[in-house]
Image (cartoon, rainbow, N blue to C red):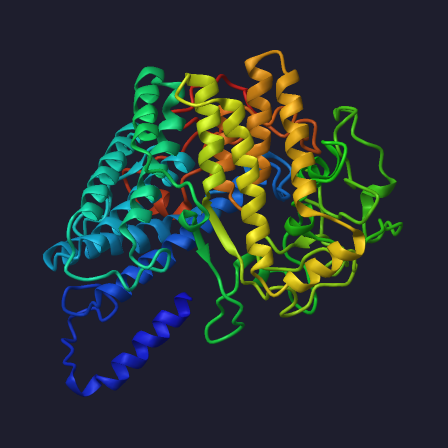
Length: 548
């Protein structure tokens, strides 16, 4: 989609070239008031934000056992050089374009444009603080300062929350034109107000460890205001298409795996094992999340070396090792950095949700170009189910309004419904209906059985810590495709508890924040690298070793 906009702009310039005059001293790629169509710029900001989300989601998913983490020790899990692109996307791309967009929008009284830009800026700043800790802010994006100093994460959070308040004011103002470049909601102010408030909710929840009273009051105010994401139409998700080239609009996870040779991500054995076995029956979402290219486990050690190995001595009796089931789910264990055997068309692939891949109907066939929904999936950035999971955690730990149990139930039901809606709105819908008819599967009954099991476990829990673990585990299972929030959840709560250990018995301490990127350290005289990855972000006051 990014390519599409760039190609369109190039074509537009070609058509209008006879009326353009370029000063050779000007940078033709720079965003200025003279060369900018504000709706195209808004679209570019949103596309860049989607890329920013994907870049930060990837390591978060891997660290929280949602995907395989391909490093043997934590210190190598997220390296300085691997963060260069993430840093560039945030600063040179998103934040720089937002800086250009807001004054243009306000001058033209296009307040929805300005509000969207502020909302995405605040979200990106919060995400960067959550990932890196203290980062440049007040001195950043100054063309005359090549060595900006870092600001404290707490101060940046305060500024981001203020930005969200200002965005809400923008959305409440009367604009002189619609935000036709808005790829999320078509410029609907109410939906964006809910997004802004929901981002505030997640930031406040992160802060509950260091400011219980203030967080409690602020979250109760959001609940009373009743302007959080609550319906399917309000879900904050970036939607992809199925176009292969010129431009490639497919979900990046699909694009990386659905090819003639397969390959791509290794799924997490731990995550798949929990979904298949932890309730005593499979999670109804498992056939939507994962696509098995084989439906029987391999006996070929050349394809999967670990099948002849003993479970590591430091693993617990209930820890998954090597293969999570006997029916073809094929991933890797946590912090496994083995080489790549000839398993590209064997390993479990991304499924229909959220990547737009294949529904698993036991076919056991390899992935292929264009298979399934062709990549027409979503980035689940902030879904309505996430809101209820956060409110359940808040009600349990802070005593904010609402019943944790009722919110937990609502959250699970919303997650199930949204997964189902994407699936049945895709080109895989006919295959799903046929499979369910043949197997005598009733989706509603599956969901009811799952919800009743979770609530029975919740009712049987005797401590708030056990109840929090149930809420957090269900949130983690609903977050598939979103490593930004799973990483926050894990550091904030230490849940889900008893996660699969690393293969190496001595992997080092868990990553509490990422190393600064190489480009920032080498080019900024005021930059100083962290001593290690155990440095927590400002809101994480949990003790050393809290997460593993």
